[in-house]
Length: 273
Image (cartoon, rainbow, N blue to C red):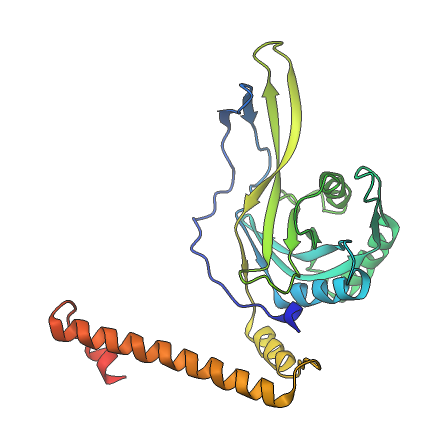
């Protein structure tokens, strides 16, 4: 099943900064924009396998074969601006394709589900919401405002918005994370100020604990595509393995040639292995 196939990626991220500083900028329209964050800035979002699997299952059950998207709530923890999304649950959601301003999200269902999840794991709290996108929609800021009401008041890090791309032709990491920033637009002509909210991109990566990795490996072993014959699967697996072996052999050949010509110094650790 292509919706369940993903790979772990580790990103080099800057050290956390507890508070973002005030910044000035001028946009393309000549308006001076003053950004004044008042909360702890989100540094990055780590998405666990259970979130990806749940979102893919949610999409397959509700919106497969349609142009609809699905929306759910992200649960997890936050530490020094780093969001760890460890769990999620689906939320009933509908929107009018002809009028993007009309949508329905069952906040009563959200509140009841959140209460049950708290009984199971009190450490997990609302850290944001997800959508299968695959891009930002006009209603997403309104959904953000609704979800933010369920974030505890003592938490300084605001919720995040995560787009999980479930399209089977996606080759890169299937997640894109955003945070909301408040900007004050100052019009040089009228001198008036206007507060605006926009989504700003934050780094996202796929992470898992050891127990989660073992569970995902066992799950993927049992995934079977009924449209592909067993012989074809075996041939495809053999070709994939031989292709990987060829790449390794070519890499070894290039290294040995560079050592022989003097471009690289011999590394006994590499040679002994």
